Image 1: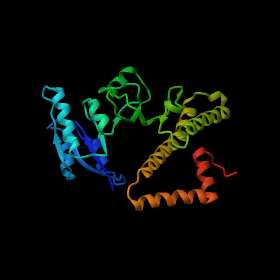
Image 2: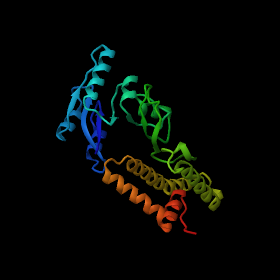
Image 3: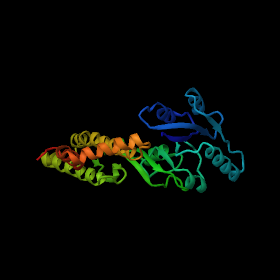
Image 4: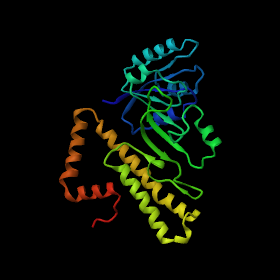
Length: 265
């Protein structure tokens, strides 16, 4: 059975549209809820035949929190996605409905509604996006996935959790961090005079960014597989895991891939 999802959004709905168009997600978007009657996201939802609701804040915040809670509760969601929703959710809401948010900065830096503006004002040369669980604070929930758009800046190379954060599955965070260090060491040893040069940093970004993106995608796939519902899907997952364990060459290849090793020996 597909996961029931409610999306909360306040604006144009570009992220919501991406979720609607993502045919590989095993979800059913049961409703889009906005706090603005003129939000473009509502039209996107209607075009996709998705239920829409508008809960406008008109003074009494406590009453609004309760109204939003009741509206979402009637859809019985497995997950709520905050996709550009410009309101802080109540503690009761986030403790009842598992909720994730996409934030346009590398948390914990630049939380809040003006993350992009604040990052630019601070003069940062590298930024990215954070997907995190929502708690009662402002962008303070546990990070699910985080990846820098670029892993270098002027005489700066991002490594480890400064460049990528993901769930602790298969020690991939550690393996990726070690791979970052190994790549930098190889580049430094190959051209000691060019340490920190634009050419070296570009080579580091090209070498690591694709691998990081692939591993983030792989971990996401494993997370989705672990949440498969229905007997047929569970049997498929069990069969795939059993095959991976039973076939020694496949098991060895997967273990080496997880460790970031390229050679079979």
